[in-house]
Length: 228
Image 1 (tube, rainbow, N blue to C red):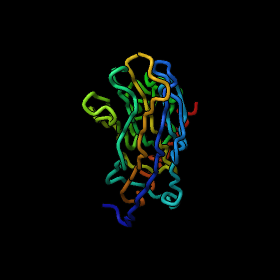
Image 2 (cartoon, rainbow, N blue to C red):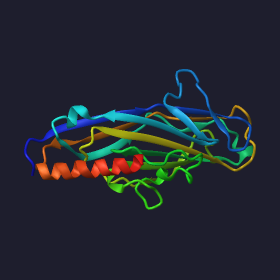
Image 3 (cartoon, rainbow, N blue to C red):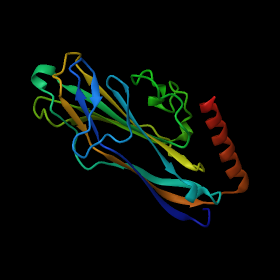
Image 4 (cartoon, rainbow, N blue to C red):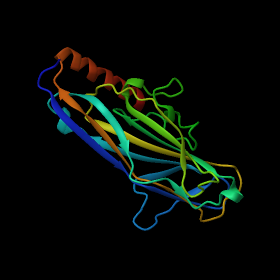
């Protein structure tokens, strides 16, 4: 067991998301409502949105220390909800997905998840390396006739590596994909997604010089590949 262990806790919050229907099938616009300003959100496609953040780790890695995660998790304070009329629209589903990486994701520019290959970061269908993906989790929420204003979770999945990192920055992504039944939605119909907090807990330590240098070399090579 390495000596000189120092505990760490890192936190990053993703802001809530409000979107309003334009009245065109599967087309939603960012909408600030009250104190919810959609900070950091970008519309990639008609019903595909992204929030991109970073976490500065210089304070943890300045002394050439490596971070080992003991646990990583997501928290949210409230529900997913909508004002969309289930009886006329047939309902909706949405995917809310989070990826934490120690290099920038290589392909996030698609207008739908299938075209943004980093939506499945670390798998063969993406250009991203699995070891760089520290946490990846997603949930699928769906509207139903019994409780039409609150979305229920119908699926949850994860695919991160949790590998140690010596990087001086983490890149944090939240993707939201909304899927309706291809019928016009009443203009002004609202979908509200809660804010979410990422928490990473673990220890830092100094590895043997050769191990640390190899880890840094590997990270540098991967980052150069993503920028080429």
